[in-house]
Image: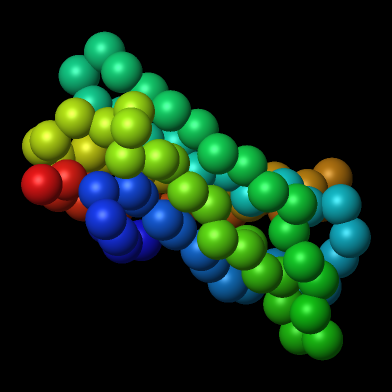
Length: 87
């Protein structure tokens, strides 16, 4: 998870066995504001991948944002939490 030109971008590798039908979601929260981006996961030979999800700079105010990246599928769930500072 990075801040690039004021936008928040995130990607991830999911430790679940390769499977079709997974969804990756990025949620960012600050005070009473939240924004989400979602993408279909890609199944690889040994794991699943979450491609780049972007929350545009135009909807973000400066400060610290809480981030949650989740992976959900019919058989698996994963979650990673972090925070970033938007200048």
